[in-house]
Image (cartoon, rainbow, N blue to C red; front, side, top):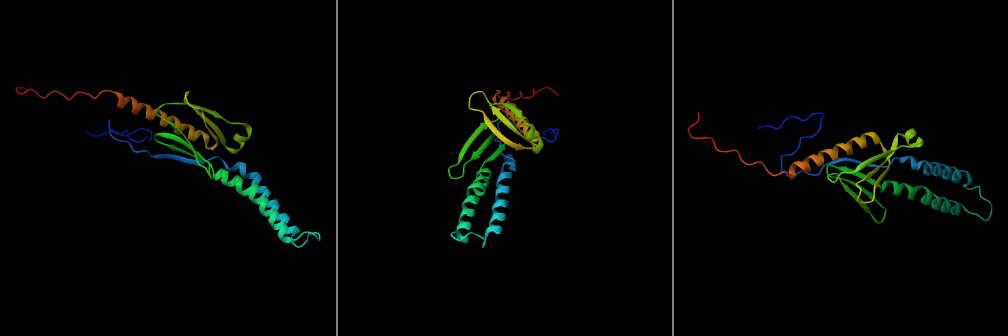
Length: 189
């Protein structure tokens, strides 16, 4: 007996009771728009260093200029970039994960099978940049907030599909197995 073909490009459902591997659906970071100020600071520091190098008043030296520029770049450019780089959202076929932290990693998870509500919020600037904020709440745990999600509509649809598929599979697997068919009668043709 063959499985029916899937509709709409959805993956085939596994056989009842068969183990299902956890597959990654999407992995993304928040939109990089928050790094705009860091980029402007980097440009300004580079311009100031180029202008003031070998052009400082008498008590100041070039190494002082470069050290100050290095501190400013470290605090206002590198740390915000590392903070953005270390904050990753992952959607799999079983759960949504948020991982953040530069030195100490923090991780939060929300299982699709438990179900949750999805709230989409898009401010004026978020609409301008094509991003949005998703808030996932299952009513028990603290809401999971996915901030500045690029292509928020597509991510929303993927989350809705994963919740639907996981709840269907959980309901199907919770049903008692069907009894085997009776053997054929010996005298019947």
